[in-house]
Length: 572
Ligand code: GLN
Image: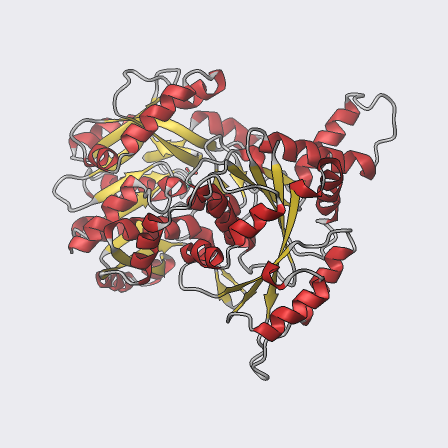
């Protein structure tokens, strides 16, 4: 039987509920349990696919093509597992299922009501996603006191009644502010969060206290008395340099053992943190540091810049750096600066490497093309991710193949669309079907012999790992479609995608003749080939991919392309 841990947040959002959940998951899996994590997003959107990144951070893509809140990314990065899309539940999904069923007469004439039908559907979804696991951690998005997460808390309370208290543990994560004018840590907001949670009938078993500094004894006692829980269940989680030290810090507080005790479980094995500790040590104190420019289109929200839109790229660089014992200093460079004034491109000489990450629309595109041009000519390591591949191809077509009007159809109308919309996408766009309709999720790519890309997938062990995954997937009809047709079984890798445009097949020949190497492709059932990777000869590292390899990068198991890129940066 699966046991549940419910994680909810009090006081305010953005205190690191996701990474704490991921850390607890990692700790319990180190103790020998099969753990899964579920994220509840109480918004009405069906998924995160149509959300602007500036609204809600980066959109995370799962293997099975889900467009999800970025917390699922934290789960994967900490647990080193692939989390499927059913592990994200939104209010929109719950209501859609209920209304669809009602329209089909599925309720046999009964009145469909908030209680019991909404909590029932929530419980059904949670149970389904938890099947086969020892422990399922359910993170409830939003903050206690929000109207919209009440149905989910209600559902968990109801699960507790059905399963018994020994099988459900509640963790409340709060924040203790230290107002600068008094320099004193305040517990009042936490007390109020405990009270608000109590209104749903839930008494937390553990309270994790996020704050700038560790909690002192007096405050621990205050919370203990207020919440009526033993003080060893009040856990201090102060700010740290890297999120990856959180599992280690929580272990010091023995949170894993304490949770297991509450769940009446005995550890199945002794945790082994040695590798994790080594990597965290390197993140904190690397031998050497490289400087990387991520050239993108940045939008400001009020007075704050939003680097959150590229959180996975950021993390993938950290993972690669940790494996190579290199620190990576990331700088966000706005591509529009190169458009306003060509001379601004000179700032790029301050960096050991350039990344053009994923993106959409025409804004800032000419600046990104200039950055790709700079990297190619000045032999600066370049990694193009999705749009970053497409724009590197445009640059190559314009300046090496002399196709003056070369462009992506996404940027401007042109008679030389070297990057064009996928034919299947055109129709969808005409019908305004935006949600969940991109080319999404993991697809297989066949890698060409003797390429740098193949070498990297081989060296990092990913070629072997993906080969084994593919063998398993082949048994599944639906997944077979994802894989595409495989003309042979060698050198196949899987990466996740999220795009509508591709390298126009009409231009492949001329690009190749001029020296652009297409190092991998995906073969569709209709036998058309989609170009998945590019690289250049006589350049220390100039690689682009149509995929988003950052979604499959984990601490201790970095993405091959990021590994190659950071390594090349380190050699400069
Ligand atoms: N806008 C491009 C496309 O849709 C690239 C997408 C991306 O970078 N994720 O194909």
